[in-house]
Amino acid sequence: MHKNEHILVVDDQATQRMKLAMAVRELGHEVDSASDGKEALLKVRSNSYDLILLDILMPDMDGFEVMEFLKKDPSLRDIPIIVISALDSEMSSVVKAIELGAQDFLPKHFDPVLLRARIDASLVKKRNRDREQEYFKEVSRLTDAATILEGGQVDPRKLNLQDMTERDDALGNLARVFTSMASEVYERERKLNQQVRTLRSIGFLFAVGVVTGLGVVLTRIASIESPSPLGNVLWVNAICATVCFGSAIVRGKLPKLDRRFLSTVFMWAFFASVMGEAVIFWVAQHLQASFISLILVCDGFIVFAIASIIKIEKATMRRLFGFVVGGSGVAMAVFATQDVGGVSAIQWAVVAMLAPLGYALRSILITLRLPEDIDVVAATGWSAFAAVMLIFPVVLLQDGFVSLQLSTSPGGGILALALILFGIVTAASVSMRLHLIRTAGAVFASQSSFVVTFAGIAWSMILLGETLPKIAWVALVLLIVGLLLVGPKEQAEEEDGFNTRIDHEL
Amino acid sequence: MNVLDTRTLAQLQELIGGDRAELLELVDTFLIEGDEIVADMQAASSNGDVELLRRSAHSLKASAQDFGANQLSALCATLESGSKTAIPATADAQVSDIAQHFATAKLEIKRYIDDRVSNGTDGQ
Image (cartoon, rainbow over all chains, first blue to last red; front, top):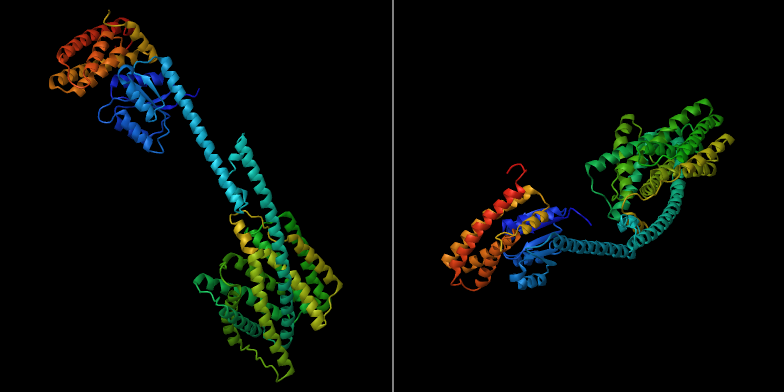
């Protein structure tokens, strides 16, 4: 039998109240006393009782009124009540009290055995009722979980049944079945979603790479024709900004500017246009496009290294190994430049690594700071515009403006064509890359660098007739293996909103 | 018939757990409250307050029974049942009788306590 239940004794007579309280305490229960109905109601509302022993005949507020108040209150109506009565004169009152919901009655003059029996019987009933109510609540939770499952939400955490699965009864079995079913479906959906995302991202990744790879070749063509890297970059960004703004305005997607966004696009412009494009234009005067393409692959490794350090992506052993393999590929690629350009080419190759560093910093910046709701093309336009703002004063000081003449001379025509094309290619490739970063993560997006490299080499061979030494091909293989090991961003859904994301993306 | 059934008092002590101090506390409470009830009864009888008279009789009846004052309890029961609608004609006499029995019961209870319970206990 349970002990230490909390019992309230209500009697206006001090002697009776004291006797009853002492007798109940002797049975091992915790006792409170109230000397009238009002005090009883106050105590019941501020404490939790398992049973009330209630005298009927009391001045001001009698036992019947107390019962009526209690039965009206849903939070109190289930506390069992034993009415105390003098059997000889109050039998009709006992009947009325039972009709009002009293569990039992006790004569004023009782013996300990009777007291124990009546109290224990009432407490057992209360415990059974509490269990029953708790059971109903659990059943209700199960039906809620079933409704959630029926509604297509299969995240097992959303079923809120974890504690119930530990029950050793039929409800626990049912909860375990629900949770395990949901987990299986959830896992299946998660994998499917991952596959869909990966496939789609791979397709996009190739598109980004092919377009960006063309940009490297165009850079080489323009840099042969024009000695001013910043002048070229100015044109490329002006054209890119025009194309992107045009597209954003037509689609009504021009974002509102705020300080954070502005600072982001200026940093972006510095990383991508000054560190990236200007350096490529500069080194392209000295290096083959195919070698620049090879060096651009570092982007993937630098992004992975930064993302791991600032913990926006996981650094697993496999990824770290990939990083090491890729790094040796990069070193080999740098030394391979010697075969076509001598020792000075190695120095240019090292300088050229500033470009992938800039692109990598851009990817991280976008991941961390670019608002989700801003249109990718408009954002690209703003970054190009910011690049124009940054570069224009420098070009003005250097008098490095490049004149775009489409037809007056054969060389000028090629330069204009290359820069205009490069501007358009930049608009397309950056917008696409931005989309890829958002959907697949910065590290995965950076894997486009090996496609850029492939495409850059292919375009260089096709358009410029370049060739690569054997060691460069070995380096390329190492780079690709390294990037494959670094792999795409883990898509394990650890936060809420997995299903929302599935719905959004599928 | 004895004024006090001491077996009932012993049962009462057993009911509350046999603790002497608690029994003494309970007895004190009864004796003080009993005086108050008898005073209420007398006032109700002279003022014609039937409700108070009935309730007082009812209260004293139950406690008297607990303390083994069976005659007193019976007198209270008679007064209670006779006061359902109006003050009975014999109310004053009945109340006086009850007061006398209560006074006797008090003495008996005190004697019992002095003889059986207080001996050897501290604080009394």
